[in-house]
Length: 299
Image (cartoon, rainbow, N blue to C red; front, side, top):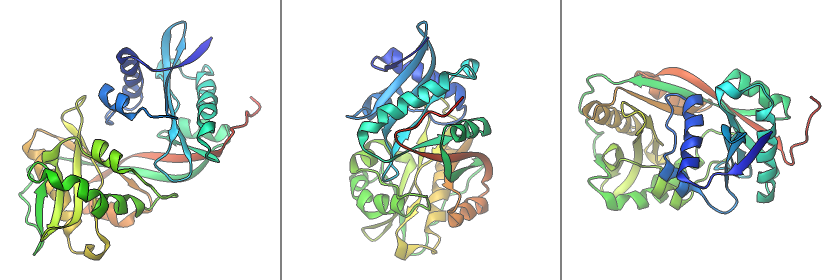
């Protein structure tokens, strides 16, 4: 019999991570410390167990996409196709209902997961594409005229002001099916984990751009590109390209052999910039959405 319970201990969070790592090799998975810090009222991080053995994990929480909840059912590969995923999905949707949103969103990164979601009443509303870049001998970067690129290691006092200048507007401008909004606390805690690999573009003392690499303690040779954003009035001047190339140069100088980034399917400008910088395409992540409460469908 499947039981679903809240993760509470470091051992629980470690088991959660093991499921995610098995299902998402190469992707950056939150650390135990991260998972603990994510917890907040209304958020549920759960383990699915059979006879005390962990077979899956999941999350029910409010989404960064405005106006919906987020559910994330995950069943370890060796335990799939036994009905556990269905039970976990409906439990997570049940846990999400008190958040008060009319819909729940979920991400599906393979055709089987997409088909599973569609069978249970979800519909596709958006897609993201992974773009991947091997690191070679990356040249030092020259900033556009009048622009200075600094790291947060050099100017730590600029990280919080960068939220208002480029962070919040950059997320709001994402070419997604819903507006993406993160809080100042999320920006401070989770949008940077290596100050030396987090770069701002300055014109004088005005913050006009940001780009970063998020390092991965499970896979130190691979890093994820975080948000790349430039204020609207400065776009088209080579600033985003210079910031990204600064990230690549840092990666080459710090033992990283590959970087990857996730880009919205309709963000053609960013995808083309990544293509010019030598990124190729990898995985596709499909955003699915369903009304709450999620009604059970005939098997």
